[in-house]
Amino acid sequence: MNTHVPPVRSSAAFAVLFAVGALACGGSSDADGSSTSATSGSGGVGGAGGAEPLPTPSAADRAFAMLTGRFDSKEQAEVDPEYYAVQLQTCVVDAPALGERVLYVEQALMTKLGAPYRQRLYVISPVAGSTTRVTSDIYDLKAPKQAVGLCDAEALASFEASDAIKQDGCTVGLEFEESAQRFVGGTDGKACKSTLNGASYVTSEVVLDENIVESWDRGYDESDSQVWGAVAGAYRFVRRTPLAP
Image 1 (cartoon, rainbow, N blue to C red):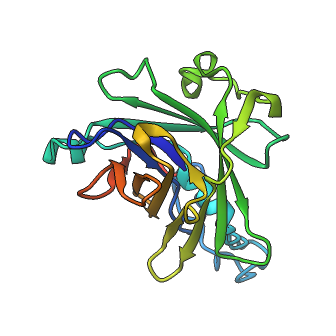
Image 2 (spheres, rainbow, N blue to C red):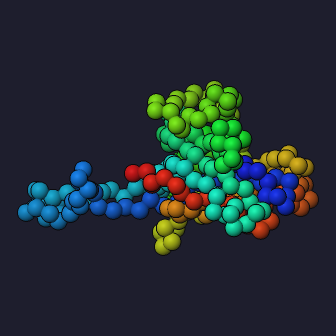
Image 3 (cartoon, rainbow, N blue to C red):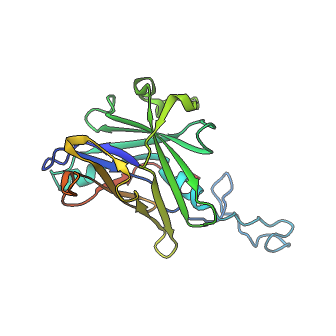
C-alpha cells in the first residue's frame, strides 16, 4: 500500500508499499486461557454444551487484521547498511464514507518516531466474485500533522471523505495463496504515477504473511529506466505486536 520509505543509501529514494498476509484460524479460548474444544460436552460438534466452530475469515478480513499493528525493518537494517530502520504503525479508524475497513498508517525512522515522514489511510475491500482477492486503496491526508501519534491515542479516530485524497492508479491488488498462507500482488502496470526524482510511474511488488511484510517499490522514467528505488530487493518489515483477532 503505497507508503514511502527513505532511500536505500545506494539510491535517491525508496518507497515502500505494504499490505498484509493471512490470518490463521484456530480454536477459541476461555478467559482463563484454557482451550474450548469443539467436541466438548454431550452434544458433540455444535451440540448442547459444545462450542460452535469459528467462521473462516474472508480474504478482506484476513488482510485487515494482518495490516493492523506495529512493524519495523530494524533487523534488515542491522544486517544490511543499505537499508534504514523504519517503523510502520497502523490502527483502525472510523471512516464510513471511505469504506468498511479503514486503517491509519504512520511511518517514521526509528530514530525519529515523533516526526513521521509519511501518513496514509488504507481502505481494504473484497473483490466482487472472488474469495481470495482484495484491494487496498491509498489516500493522502490533507492535514497529516493533526494525526501524528494517532495510534497511541485511546479514542477511536474518525475521518470524513473530505479529509483525504485518493491516489488514483495506485491501488494494490492482492491474491491470497492458501497453500502458502500468504498474499501476493502489487500495482497495475504503469498506472501509479510519480514525479519523484524524474520518475514517470511507480511499480510495487508485495509479499505478505502472518509475520513479515515485504515490499519492493521502484520508480521509472518515460523510457522505462529505473530512477529510484531499491536495487537489491524489498524492504522487510517484521511484526512486533500480536496479530489482531
